[in-house]
Image 1 (cartoon, rainbow, N blue to C red):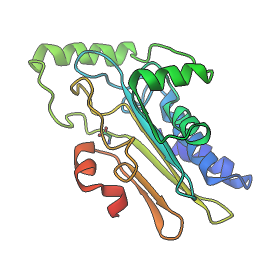
Image 2: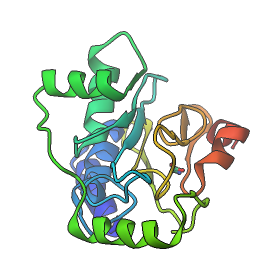
Image 3: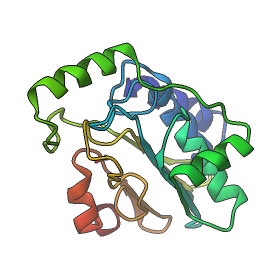
Image 4: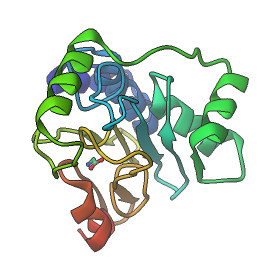
Length: 206
Ligand code: GLY
């Protein structure tokens, strides 16, 4: 899936666009892809069957926006971008993030596909309602770009670990954990088991 995401981002860079626009365009591809079960629409739900999404975005100036525990909005990264561009805040969570998205014209929709629902129901039969860390080899998308003006930006978006506890938030919406951009030094982002990235503030550390 993510080669197509790279192509979408590259289209922006090739037209002398900005890195921040490239990474947003890139990660929107898996967010809309029902076959990518780690991101956006089609993402695996928590153990109660709710798809809850996390995302963040950061530009070359150190400006950042993020959302966590957001339900029913496919393009989480664009909500994070709105938080960055149009509010004095960095992170909006849950109901507040959803209301903010609606007030900015985003559509609310069911993100749980039949495939992810069927797999979750099978998990319920066998797992005794106990989350196990990263049983699905989780594959968040994190994307970094460098544009013609030598500006860097990054974006990270995920449905989080499959069958997590309700309310669990991983590294992906946390600046420094799931993503960090320093235009003089470089940029880093992460995928996989977010608990590790949170404990090490991994992207900042890199
Ligand atoms: N790396 C994504 C997550 O753990 O939620």
